[in-house]
Image (tube, helix red, strand yellow):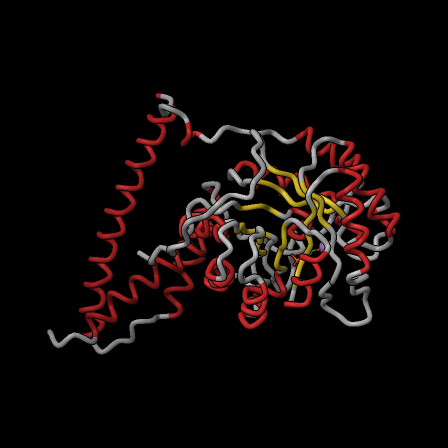
Length: 365
Ligand code: PEP
Ligand code: MN
């Protein structure tokens, strides 16, 4: 089993609420009026706990709007004074940290394009030495869990005990439903490796368009996330960045009202009997699957012995192709997704190869 990261103590920066925390505000601060008006309307919904805005915008391509810079921090400070809500901004270097602290920013976040670069993260960590402010770390653009954990460790080692993670999805080339694919198994594994770290989902940057926001946000809530960061703008279609994915404060409030909040069963005193019984069925299936795996590997080893005796290669591409096609068509008829079957059988096949490899390269017969 992989080594669990020792990140402790973790002090929570989450407000004491009986529901997930909601962070909202425009993708970018554009004008004073836009920031103040958006923040006022968000506060008036009584559903938003923390205000966000991008001040320095790392854009993928040049010649796009790259943020208003430190000037925007004054507008945010004003929004904080007017609404009484804490504010958060993205920082990408030491200078940003200094400016943000100077302007009374309450929470910092590190963007996906910064998390990928350990030098930048370290620079931010060094600038934070001796400062007590919560820092939220977005996942890196690429699906590299170690890089994400590494960034969290760098910030934590600088003495920041109030850390959090933001899941904003991962870049993927080619056709895709979402702007950034969620790959939910990564934040799930992050939570396993750093128990207790608050995880916030950013459905805006996962979805990439407002029509898909609700389903992504609800999925995060069903996975027991601690909160959501959703971009909001008084005039989304006219936004200077990420126009397609922003919603008005009013639409945000309507969406929040539609969320279904479910209970975390692990905090209940006793697991309900019906759930207990269903879980024991799952455990039984898992036992059977494991035993079948073991049996399958025994046969694979016999095949390995045969191949060795007859000087045949381990990999028989045509046979592997046949297996994959067969299991995909059978599995799909059984209601399993092609993505799952492929992933699963590729892992099984690799394990068989590993077993056969051992046999081929042992000194025995
Ligand atoms: C943002 O939050 O506006 C942003 C730039 O996000 P990300 O770093 O996830 O791309
Ligand atoms: Mn954005």
